[in-house]
Length: 67
Image (cartoon, rainbow, N blue to C red; front, top):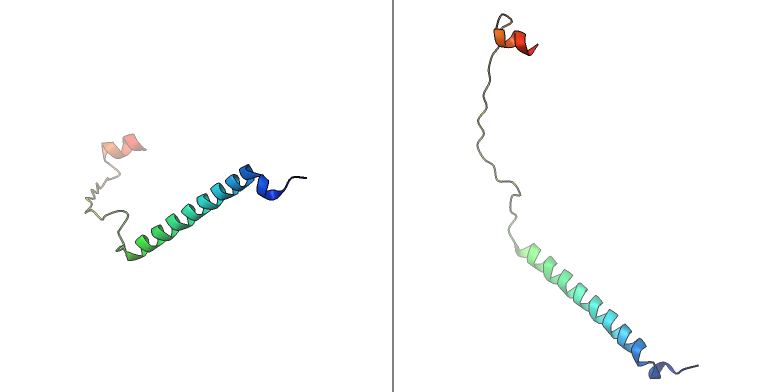
């Protein structure tokens, strides 16, 4: 069997995985800290709306064509 220290490619793979995990944890911590300091922002700003209501009588021609 080979000695673990002579398998340089295994150590290279382990080092790469460790660095990727370290970068992921660092980015997550930075995102969490930045989100904590930001002021809450409304996702959808409120805009005034116009509402139009049209009354229909039973004798109206528009009512008879709709029904």
